[in-house]
Image (tube, rainbow, N blue to C red; front, side, top):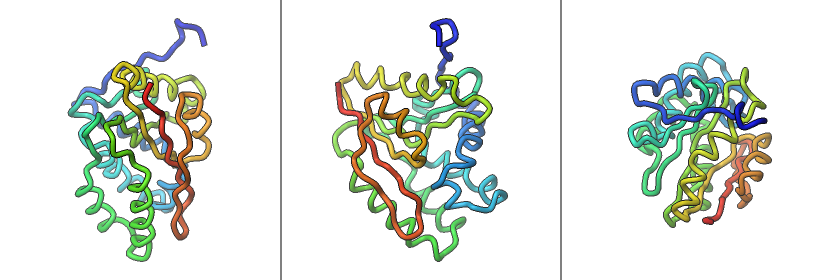
Length: 197
């Protein structure tokens, strides 16, 4: 990809947050974990946007949500000290996930907590590219927007890959696999850390 054809990445203005949510919703339509939670398409479309907003926490308000080329893709980064909205996530799980699945989700969340860094770091809970625009460099551009900041501040970055197809992209940007997360019937999730540079 030539310099002139590199995607343009910009901060998502709070008033445009629903456009970023829509891009991520499209991107996760075939994501193993998202669809394990919501195998029914109608339930996925109805409920997953709430999970996107809750997982993204204060990213929109903090100016740490990025979009590429007019919302071909979006990434919701959480600055050091910021977190997903755990209260909203708990309420969403309780209200939208079948009771028999909630125990498995709780076990997955417990395992996630074991890998999550305790030192200051940037966290990437969600990144996605509209399927119409995949393989055009948007994912890389969305990663680089904040990884440059990580390097300036000499801070690590952390994510959990919910789709094995994306692990190579993350590895090319310096993330290393820490282990695997899986409980009951859940698909594998892969926690990954990019060390401070």
